[in-house]
Length: 398
Image (tube, rainbow, N blue to C red):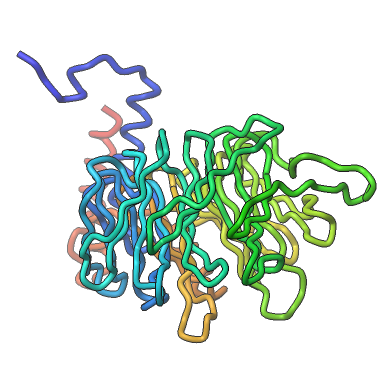
């Protein structure tokens, strides 16, 4: 007779304690959890409703559109038979959702009709990152995979325009991609790549070709370095800070070395600020007031951007946090943070200081027992008499 019950198998004390801890933590309602049916591996904002809706990638092979206000799935996109690892919205008028998968393909669907569109095949290993852009009047899709390759696609024709690899150093599995909003033009993209090594690489990409950008040192402009190397190991996330004041748009990074960093454009992308999250950092978001980090330790941490000090820790997830989305109002102003996890939940956290303070106080308060709740309802029911308390004390001593 075979059994799938984990209690019938050998477990170390540490494994059992970890399982029990997560089971006890799973019932918490912090962040108003919306529960899905499988692990959530990535998320992106819904451009049609950036405050109330997101797209998520699930390990069961689905892409779903979730309304956070109603906690309902409003659209489900089917096709992949392997985990979906990354998402991007783009195409004409941002009407297409793209999804990279463990099946080595990039899938696409019409957002409103949920009908499948083109499938992009070419990678020989998992697709880890997808982004969209415009180049020389064409909608393009850029993908990065565990096969160490970056591919540039024409969205409309499905034709692969370029395959990019580092010609001089060993590029490991691509983890994330971003385009530089400052240096990119209508006819040239500056593409930034993070991988499973500490190196960040940049390329100039045009319709006709591509070339890697040689990096210079901040204090030695006459010397060159092949890559930007500010972390000790894998870099999982790249983010160019949105800046409405016309200042430098710096590059933010999240790494397996336990840190998130601000790489200053004015210093040729040398680390200017470091936020020590303490475990693998899978995601980083930045607002005018806060830096928010999340990762393997299950927590979402909010840092004061001006001082660099930890402001608060948002406890709710009970498995690794895989991604975060900034929820914005109609004017593009950040209103809240949405985090997703392999615990199958989506949780939403406020950004206003007063709301954060109230939430942290609620998180830190120990849960009330049934007897405490009864004693606080004003009826007096559930209270012990002096004799009953003495009898209970004797029983506890025995």
